[in-house]
Image (tube, rainbow, N blue to C red; front, side, top):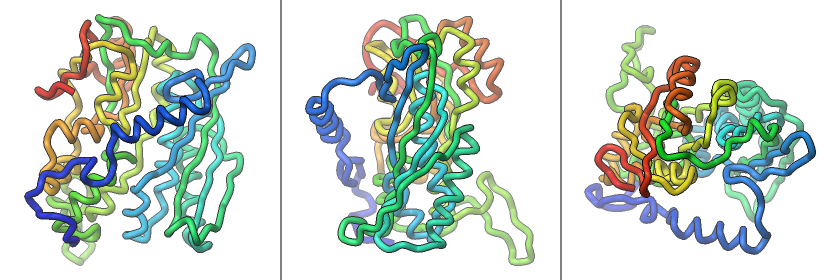
Length: 341
């Protein structure tokens, strides 16, 4: 338990320490200094018959949950997922990955666990791990930091145009949970009155005789639920390439406002997937508003693609857990669950 603030104080991402508007302004300043580059979720380089794509990202403050539990076995999956999913949202097939592990103090056991997660993530993404770098920086790093870069390839025909069209249907696919963004807000919310080692509400650990009452997520602790690895959406590429996919969005930092990256339209999300219990828990513990939750988290839907209605039916037939979650209209903003974002 922490004493970071009154339990009834309304928590926001900015109050927790991450101001999205300031972050976007800083990113714009960086891009203005280095010059323009092609692509939204990934940088694209024309190499003749194909495009070479690059994306880079890290795990973020989810690492602090891993540190608290002493379990670094899944953060490698998150690292690869955050990069590979950005390429997939561009229509690019991920090919290879390099990691960067910065540590305060080298530790063989921790490094092995991180490596195990990277190997599992690479397998799920269908890519090769082609190298990496480990840096020991005791004056810069507390604990460890994990980031990486993913490279992919796509023909011009495979690249999504990146702009939805009015009349398109929005095809969505569920997330696996909180993924790897918004953890600064989630951590502060849940540690107001709990520790990461506390049982997640509604889950049973068992009676000590080897029996366990299953209740949705298998009797995990709060920390274990927060560490649920980010889903990797590699299986969507073939169905999305087989139809006229106009644009796609990986629902990460900024939550549902990511749909606006598909162009200036009105996105009406009428049938989103139900949020996993972790979101309701974070919202209740942090007294977080509905709007703030949807501006920060994926709220149960991790990936959305825009395409004509007939093609949407083909994709939902091909992908078992995909469904039409909404539509694209003329106008501006994102409408979801009675909110206007």
